Amino acid sequence: MALPRGAGVPVVRREHLGGEWQEVGRGGFGRVYRARHKDLRMDVAVKVLNDNASHFVFKEASFMDLASNEFVLRVLGTYKGPGGERGLVTEYMRRGSIESLQKALSGPPPWPLAFRLAHQIALAMDFLHHKNFVHLDLKPNNILLNDTLNARLADFGLSTVSRSVEMNSTNMQTGPRGTYPYMPPEAFDAKYEPVRAFDLYSYGILLWSIFTGREPYQGALFSLVELRITEGDRPRCEDLLGLQVVGISDLVSLMKNCWDKDPHKRPHFKDCLKITERLFPEHSNGIQRAITEVLARLESSNQQGITKLNDVEGQRSVCDGASLSISGETMSRKAEFVDHHKPTIIQRVSNALAIAEELGSKVHSEIYCNIRAKKTNQDRVRELYCTTLRSGGERVKAAFYDALKKHEFDLMQDLEN
Image (cartoon, rainbow, N blue to C red; front, side, top):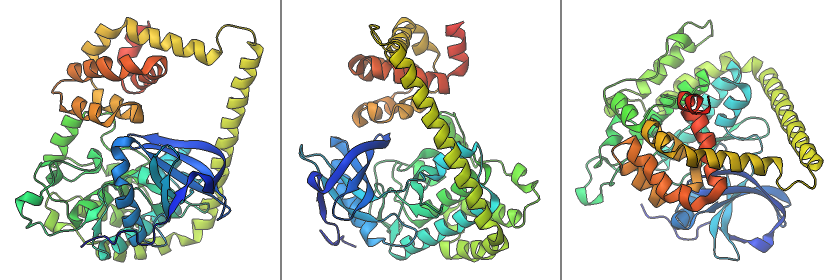
């Protein structure tokens, strides 16, 4: 199935976008900004891609345009900047994603909202599969939320036209695609060709994450996660089954059916919808109250963030005339720490891939591929020091320090004591 070139995807140039651009996200693909579309008179999200990812612009925009649906993020055009930079312009979702919601709530959303999200994602994916597309990257960060916390499926960068598993070997993919905690066991085979069953597996893991508020296999190395998944290990459901929640046992059964090791035994999304359509009405009476409570929590969290920012700005003004601001002093201290403890950090880091992923766009995609190809954590961290940390300066070293604090707690405690 060929994609029609230029179908429904206009070009949006810099002069069409006014206001001060606000960065709202970043990753290995590039950065996302909030801007104001002058003609449409609405806030939009501008996803500006790194040079190495810019060739995905038209493909992703075409998939999103063809997959236009109530629960799919609406693409408004491709972006072309004055310096030749490329990207996508979409509607702006100011409530973030399921991932950011989990962080704000420090856990799962209220049950009515969780059941509604499960149903809406199934609706979006059923529509996508009817269009003969597979998404290949279902995860909390790729489910955005509108002002009333309805789901919007996003990030079609890995999407492709679904094919039969009986493909000629010359058309096979060269390696695994997606986010590895959400990838099915068969996808770790370098010769795997993505089919719809991939998305069903990811949906099962995504449901578990939504209803527990946790990330699967959190902090585990890629090699360990790959081994656990391929050997049949899945997230634990005992805590969910112990809850007195209407429909939770049916939902857990759906999760387990979706993440079955045999892709042929996984249900289709039309089968998932039969279950979510039955479960959500059991909780629909509480949906408005749940939304009101969550929005209040989010507003409170945002206000606290603004207060903290104002406090920091106030501290900076007190230091007027000093040679360095507070943030500058902190950055220098972190960079010095990273340089001083280089041998120990290289020797003892156990989550090198997680740290590289945490650095996001600060690690060039080619360097990231080189890091993943290394067989030991020591070689991976050594590669980071020789490339990204050497050229990135104090700001990147400070980000590396923060990633170490998050993923190497015991190591950092030893080094700082």
